[in-house]
Figure 1 (cartoon, rainbow, N blue to C red):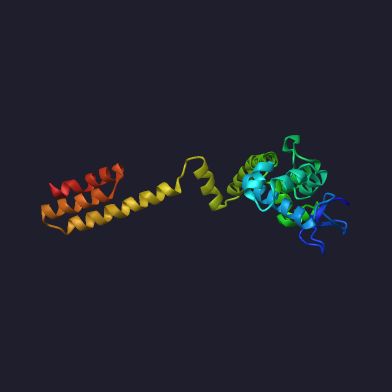
Figure 2 (spheres, helix red, strand yellow):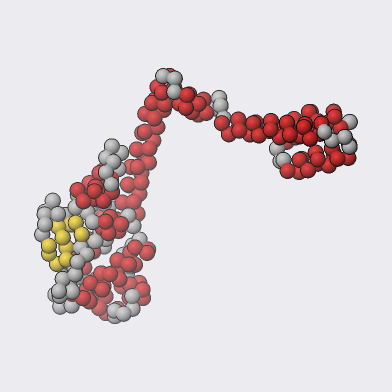
Length: 249
């Protein structure tokens, strides 16, 4: 992993950005001949900020408008150098995203989408020498993000049969929660519907108790009218009618 980058955050005395490699080497990020390192660092920062906001490498016109402290001529000169492409690549930004994912990105997708690897994201990235800023820039690349998402979605689909078999096994061994979940999944039992039925029963009992102790027909009608306005489920109203209308008549 001699060429894998861990991070590139520290600034050297001359203004250049230091690149720290997985093997311990610390070298400056490439700077084109004739460019002041501070100026080139600002150009990279302008491109990076635009990329994070919009998900693609800006044109000279776009970056000069978004960061106008640097002249368009200077941006054009930097864009014509191979050092700019190399410096952006270190940061996980490709000048030509149409080329597809890089071998480094392919390895990252395989590692990050491994459902059996429960380590933290930062630990996984450190293993392959990818800095967090570089990964964040990769996630702005539509193809990389799409492939990682599809791989993760496929993992989810692959896990469903395993989860169902385990659930059935737990139910078969007498696990009450597993039994209820199996019945819920198969539509034979709905805990939410059970709660609704329980609530209906409580309402019916309350209405019956109130009507039992109210002698005035007008008061009974008023009580039922208010209950009917509050309750919007027709089935409950039908049940109430069956239970109470006889008392009012």
